[in-house]
Image (tube, rainbow, N blue to C red; front, side, top):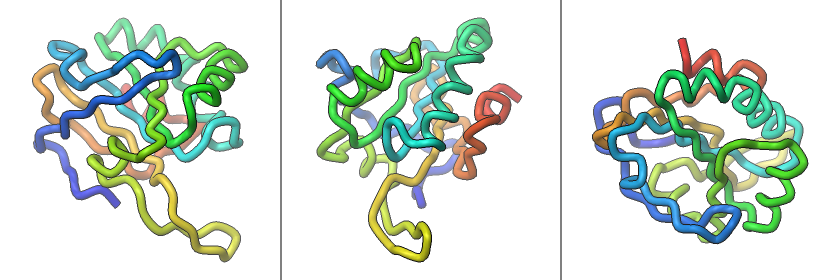
Length: 150
């Protein structure tokens, strides 16, 4: 699990989104940022999570939040995922796991009795000055917007 907690400075990051554009933490100065890490495009839990965020996107905008997702999938996979589910926010293609490692959300996992390495589904709410306000480690994929907005 992540070593970061509320009150910590958010690690600076730079990554390419689905369109090959660079996305940096400093791009969100003065805005609240919901930076959410998820394992893989087009899987049931990840699809539930992004669709829940999409369906509540106007509420995030009304409260001054920007949303950015991060997974180790490629730009092409992200483009397809965004198109398929009409997602209104960018997804960073962190194929080298630089942002994932900076936020400490990669490690051993277990599913169906098998152990493997992967992304811990985790969300960081970062204030306009780059401080972490909240870390949500137990993400409820179908109710994630409520966890963030409450």
